Image (cartoon, rainbow, N blue to C red; front, side, top):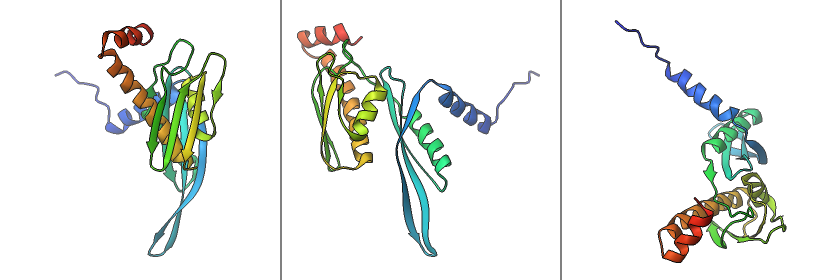
Length: 185
């Protein structure tokens, strides 16, 4: 009878998280906030941490972690950010190919491609996400809400929408097909 080396579920679970932590991603904490929940015995305090993780080479992710201790909340947020990483297609001058308007909740975001050498013209959490994603030339503007969480989510969703539009452009008319296949293979 052949004996197989079977790993326990906990060992597989821990190994997958270790592999997520060993990658060469940079992490930035956007916000540490104390939140409360009212229960029968009083108030229960927890910390909510918002983390952006990226490799500055067209990959970025956003994660949220909640726990009673800030260190545990930070670890949870980092793991969550690395699980939710998206790939961004950039032009040769490290910008996005076209203008994107996106709204999430009460915040609206406009991402506009910038000329070579302009840098990142953006504020708050949008700037952090764009820096960690590897975009070098872009103009961004937020309208509406000042919430860091909503602005960060809107930015990630707008970048994800960009990928979907590029995939759609590759399948449309011949002229668009030539453009998108030239820059985004």
